[in-house]
Every structure is written in C-alpha cells, then in structure tokens.
Length: 197
Image 1 (tube, rainbow, N blue to C red):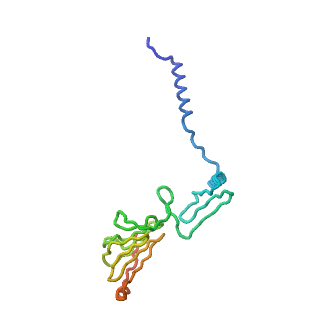
Image 2: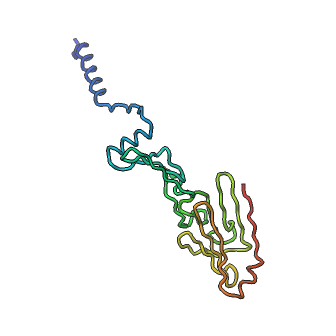
C-alpha cells in the first residue's frame, strides 16, 4: 500500500502555508482621502518644518505648507528649475561640451546650443518645443574658451572676440573689440536669425 500523508493532513498543511504567505505579504497602500495640501499641512505640523507641495511645482513656482497651518507661494519671473529624470533640477547655465560637438548649458529652460568650433554647426541655436532659431557666423569659428555661462571665441576677426553667454531661456551675443582699428569691420557685420523647424 502506498505511503504518504492523509488527504486531510495535506489540505491542512496547504491551508497553513497559504495563511502564512498572506500574513507575510505587505499590505497594499490604501489611497489617501486627503488632498496634497492637507497631507503636506499634516506633515509640516508634525515635523515643525515647511513641506513642499510637489504637485504645484513648476518652472517658476513652488508652494509650501508651513508648520503654523499657513501656505506660502514662492514665484519668480524667470524659470528657477527644469524638468529632470527624477523630478526637478535647479537651472544651471554653466557651459559644457556636448557629445554632438556643440556647447550647452547644464540645465536651462530653453534648448540652447553654441558652436563647438568649425563651420559645421550654427553659431547658436535656441529651441523651445518644436520651434527653434539659429544664428550663423560668416566663416569658421575657433574652439571656444568656456568660463561659467560664457563661451569666448577668440580673434573671430583681427582684434575681435565673439562672446556668447547662456541665460535661463536664451543667450546674449557680444563682440569684444580690443583695438580701435578693429572696430571698422565690426560695424558692417550682419547675420540675421534664421528660423529652424
């Protein structure tokens, strides 16, 4: 006669295993009945520190729940943060060399790219969404010298440096004329913006 546990014992063991598994499984998080403002206010009151209401955060605005039950909105006329893979990152206009040969700010609200030198790319490009504007330089550019948000292209003309400075949502361009003799050819220089889509 085959040996083994009785059917009743096997059922009882299986029941105990299922029960143990259910007890060990973490409970699913229940949806909160509180609004983000109420949750933040509760956290601020419990911790004694202000708590950001992240659902209200955008490029220019932050809202905080204060420990005393009030709310504070901080807003800026220009972007202070940009979207990042893990949420938001502070604006950082310091320039770095990119893999495509251009020079770009670390984090800016607009897509700003400067030439890394040569004549294959536009002097500067600014894009927002699907629209962009490019500026060309009449000739080849030297490799820029980077310092913070500035890219300096030395001697683009005799006695003249081109200085591009990245900003939060664009850039500025300056021709630094180093001698009086160098001023005359600069006066006739013209390179209008070229829309790019």
